[in-house]
Image (cartoon, rainbow, N blue to C red; front, side, top):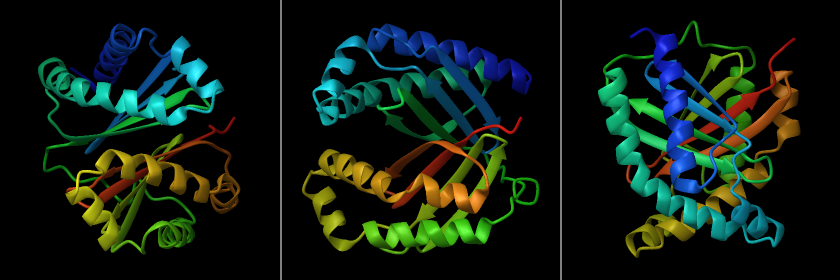
Length: 229
């Protein structure tokens, strides 16, 4: 199966999976396969009851419920990618922008393939890394390592390794992983200023998503950029 067919089939699958489990699926699902990553961007995704909760400023309730559902769905998503497309996903990250009614999943392939850094390079990379470092330092600490790739004209992926501080590790050990993730999600998104990154990149940023793997002390930030006309 070629890349375009995989992207089309997985787009249909994700739309149906979310519709069956959330009561309402996204109106659009964009799947992009750029080994060793697969990104899934969803638009117009907010169930009626979630809309009520968001209107009542209870976004945490929506995020907690979605986290519970995603913990059940991730094994199915991985199995379907394996069976239908021959793609083995080692890790799957996700995040939502409830105000924009959008969401994203970031799959990391289990293959030994490495990304072609030269073809995925972009201008102002160092400046963007400096801004990511500044934000990380405000939220937790300076990452031990930052890498980033322009996967396509709309998708910029940033990986951070080594960002957890001692108190966060202790909260995880004591079983407060869910509360920590939601708190960090809100904090970092407030610090990740759209204007700052738009100025650096010279492009409009439509969405910013962030997720963590606490066990691996790894985080991904994904920027959805407005395509150039």
